Amino acid sequence: MAERGITFVFSLLAVFSNTLTAVIQTQQTVLAAVGKDAEFSCQLLETKDVLQVTWQKVSPVMEENVATYSKQFGQRVNDGFTHKFEFKYTGLQNCSIVIRKVTYEDEAYYHCLFNTYPEGSLTGRTCLQVYELHEPVVDVRQSNSEEWVVSCSATGRPAPTVTLSVSQQDLSFSQYNTVSVSNTNATFTVTTTAVLSGSRKHSTQVGCAARVLSAPHREVMVMLPDDDDDGDFTWIIVLAVVSVVAVLVVILLVVKRDWISAVITAHFKQQNKTGNKTPLIKHENEQLRQRTSTKKTPKNINRKASPSTAKRLFEED
Ligand SMILES: *[C@@H]1O[C@H](CO)[C@@H](O)[C@H](O)[C@H]1NC(C)=O
Ligand SMILES: *[C@@H]1O[C@H](CO)[C@@H](O)[C@H](O)[C@H]1NC(C)=O
Image 1 (cartoon, rainbow, N blue to C red):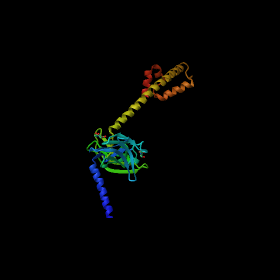
Image 2: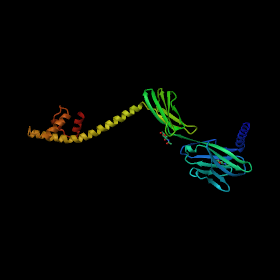
Image 3: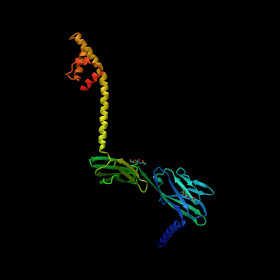
Image 4: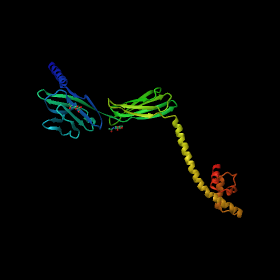
């Protein structure tokens, strides 16, 4: 029992002395977004007689040799790893490898072993951490003239933290509410909602930042809806209505020109043979009378049957 304890302490010391005397410079943790490449590099800071550099993937369940580099055999990536790993820089004092398109299965410790003579191997250790972070989605709704409900959602793994911000100092968030939903693919969708209140100035922006571990955060900025936006919108409606009316005027003018000539014909026929109107002309005549006010008689139209008259008639409608 005591013996085992002492062995444990010794092996612990061995690990410590190894890492302390090893003077290998390497990253403690490499953070890589899922689907991206991850790079590990180890540098032996003291000049030693290195025979070979070995890269290992070490997980709680196994330790596998991934790749080796030596003067004699050059670069070798072992079977089963060739699709994933490649050397970036090779040297016996300085060596780096790249993992292509990382997945969560690649999460492990990666050891670089400098096999030296006569000291034996010196080990550097790096941890690969894989994460996922999608761009946040912001939604802003105005609840009254000085209050907006801002909601921001971000999906990531591990669960991201979502932070809201506002470009205008005297506006403030309150009534925070955060909900985290776990998705089937082990990611989390975190939604933070808060009420933003105060009197907004022109071009105020609301920001939402999503963070996972120490990875670069992702931020989205949106403009706070402008009160004047309603005015702009009204203008668009007015413009649209004016255009539609203009088109209708043109169409009606063209159509009315036919009516007018019909009316003229009808009037002449009326003068020539009173009481002998064709049903079609009578019908058209009535239509016109319905559209123009009853004050006007076909006689008026008859006298000045030019397009400007028609236009005036239309405007008087
Ligand atoms: C070792 O590699 C790192 C990164 O690959 C590089 O910045 C450094 O200059 C290299 N050092 C030597 C001595 O080659
Ligand atoms: C995981 O699920 C979320 C939400 O369903 C989705 O947005 C994301 O793209 C998925 N991630 C992967 C790697 O499929």
